[in-house]
Length: 525
Ligand code: HEM
Ligand code: SF4
Ligand code: SF4
Figure 1 (tube, rainbow, N blue to C red):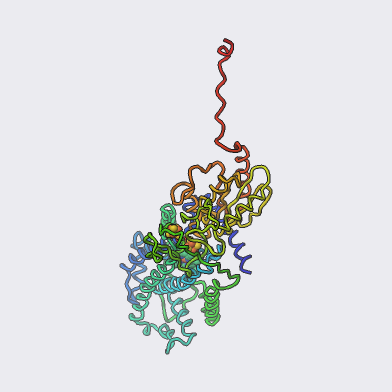
Figure 2 (tube, helix red, strand yellow; figure 1 turned 60 degrees about the vertical axis):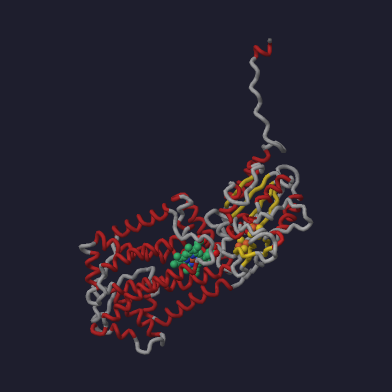
């Protein structure tokens, strides 16, 4: 049931991401930067909020006038800041919901990844509470509607001793103190939100919390244009003597309000169902908990490369425990390890050329050890016939996950392409197991293991240890970054590699270009 939904969503995201790539380029693609955008919008909301707060009057009788003053005579600074505050908050809700959907579509919420998902759920509640208390503060007709509907919703649950909706029954009952409490909530909840946002990324190495400059500039300019074209305005002063109807609702923050207004019980049921569904999602079938990575101290020199490369903070270095000459050793936290195998690819001991009977490395995946990877490579390539023999080292999550062996094509499928140490490519070509190697990873925007594509590119480009040796003929190598909906492009690029390899001489460097023909007169003389 979940898989087909994920496939449809992934297809939709892929399509939208490719379109945005063409529009703003892959680096500034907002769909690839949703977490960072969430952080960026939080700071915009915070800065514009401080500005607005400086000119806002928190008294119940003066709040509306002070907001009117901002959007009226002071529109060019305070009014623009008010609009920034409102539209950046709306955009934050949109970004958060799309981010949630994309993480679900990419299946990055199960197993050890449950933590980021689970800590994301309170973020939704905090963001909504921030927005709703904000609407309340303006004390216009919409605020009155929000206040009465929210309190009736709270009163429906037997939480408070006395019904708090009474505060809104007559003008005299709404005190300045109650209003100050709201202001306090509107400032305190974002601080808690920021703290939970920080917890949310604690199990992510090198989290992206700042969008690229171009994307940041696009967001700021768009917010400015919208703020000038459609300034945020109030909907007339609140009047507790009247029922505030009809009001224009903000469709991001107040989407559940019509339901809460008519049937508070149904609104509670909807919120509880959404909360429950999100909370149990990481633990629903199909559950797959591959064994975490394991360190083999006899082959670990404590170099720390695996610690640097792990995308999920699952590794750290600790004081040596086995009396070896090295100072440190790597240690795995099994509760954080997603078994991507990237650490296997970064360990200097992961060399398939080693002759030892049993190929053991410094850190390995018990479910798919390096020794089996080498055996699988040899056996897959031995089935290749004549003609250019291509080996595809593919990631199970991108287009490569659907790649099957074919005449002239062997496939070695891994949990992540970065699990293959660069020496494995060297091994395949130098030991004549294949004539060409295609590395087929996820799309650059949506690496399932966050950093696998980036590390592989850097290893090949000699920018990150372990390097792909210079002796490996680059003309026999292709890197293909394709999502699961780009199987067609993947196949075309593999065919291009095949043709390129077919045009190369069997081994050795390409022949020198033919010498220019001798002048005719000379030949004759
Ligand atoms: C205020 C709202 C939020 C902000 C600012 C935010 C921010 C972030 C950031 C910065 C990352 C790290 C991205 C990276 O570098 O790969 C991240 C990851 C993640 N977020 Fe959020 N997030 C928010 C809400 C949510 C919500 C509501 C959910 C789902 C319930 C969620 C689920 C996840 C998951 C599952 C990951 C980890 C993905 C992985 O394993 O690679 N987030 N978030
Ligand atoms: S397999 Fe290795 S790199 Fe991947 S999460 Fe586990 S320890 Fe980190
Ligand atoms: S990369 Fe290998 S040798 Fe280096 S610390 Fe990790 S396990 Fe040990």
